[in-house]
Length: 399
Ligand code: PLP
Image 1 (cartoon, rainbow, N blue to C red):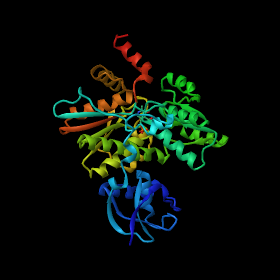
Image 2: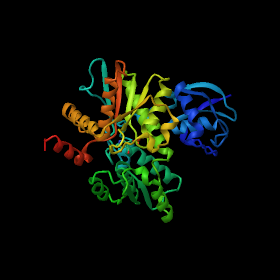
Image 3: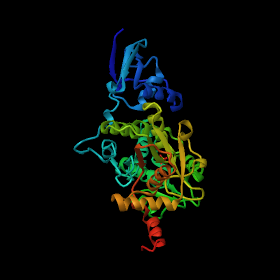
């Protein structure tokens, strides 16, 4: 039977499948490093079998797929042959057609060695998500993907409601501005005052809620959005959050590591919705066949660190994947680590990045890490946290 590559864009499936239906297929494809069967299609490019493989490939992002007429055929095709890495190659000269392209065509975000932490057999690398244009954070990725998905499905109304600790809000305010809709954002009480200013400058309406965590009022936001017919993309439940990190964040990190000849021992990151670290876990545990450990950083009991929170406060994707450890980081230690990185590396990282740094140091201190390469995912930069840095410097008598 004839087998050929069809452009993925040209294929269509009438059978809708959820992320949960195809999770095992995604794992299998990453583990195998390719697909082991064709997708059967009819004359119009409609998928007529292997729907799960089609949907898994759609979520992983490929340029083309191996297809056959009517019946599936067993044949191994590696991911590289499907153009799997094409969409994360970046644009060398960085000329873009819009601010939206400045986001998704400018990936990958940089990966660089932290010399101050790379001692005694450890090479430590940071992937810095501050290189995103709207919120200078990892949350631009989900703001874009959730928004574009809702738009494509005709589910986008003229106003967006969202509970956010700032970064998702800035990303959605940017998307709303670019597409001429309105964003109304609900912020928790424990977040810096600068957020109201930044979000209002970006054209959003801002509501401060009298509760310390975003998860405390998601239901209120959902109810209000339904009452007024607004779109609630809901970063805490929307699987596009997980999927964008699987398709881009994890994949581009994989490509960067391959190009640099690095097999990481572990990847360490912060957890808020758990979107980016859960996707990175699923991806790396499958693609590197269990060789990569995954650690999450959460605030110590009773502490708040903007952007991250404790696992027991409730999050979706972390329970679908495997983590090798969750490390408690006190707020003061997160701030101190961010200051230390600023003073040793010259980069101003955010507080959750400080927590990730501290989590790595704690693992080293406990003797939990073997010599080798470690990746720290830094979610944002320190510019939003002047209030917290002010408080820290005053306490130290440096201001
Ligand atoms: N760090 C910062 C600064 C954030 O804004 C967020 C999310 O809001 C996170 C970490 C956590 O990311 P995720 O929601 O993917 O778990």
